[in-house]
Amino acid sequence: MTPSGAMTTPANGEAPHEADKADEQVLTPLRAYMRGHATGDPAHFRAAFLPSAHVEGIRDGAFVSWTLDDYCTLFTGQPAPDEATRSRRIDSVHVYGSVATAAMTLRHGPDTFTDIFLLVRTDGRWHIANKAYHRH
Image (cartoon, helix red, strand yellow):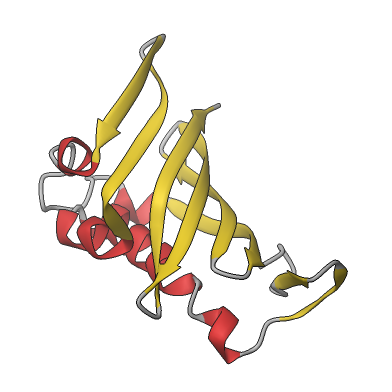
């Protein structure tokens, strides 16, 4: 999905085309991920990610690589106190057959994050396989 809302899907080297209904399913785990942040409920992350997923980035100047279980412990089950002022936007999604990439911008208080996702379609469903993030 581009900022204008169109999703592109390269197919066998051909020009990208607008998403069809099957391609739209790639948004399901990304939306669950956003609900996890909005609600603080780690169950949404567990629905979005593969159990083997990792979340990686720089935190407090050091590289971190969390398992899904470790990542879920960062959430209390309650929305952040400033949730009403936070925003999340899917910037792009590119589907390549059974894999996809996506980028998202999250504005959480004074922090802006760019999240980059690798997604995989298994058993007819899309899941986030891994996430890397950058705090601006």
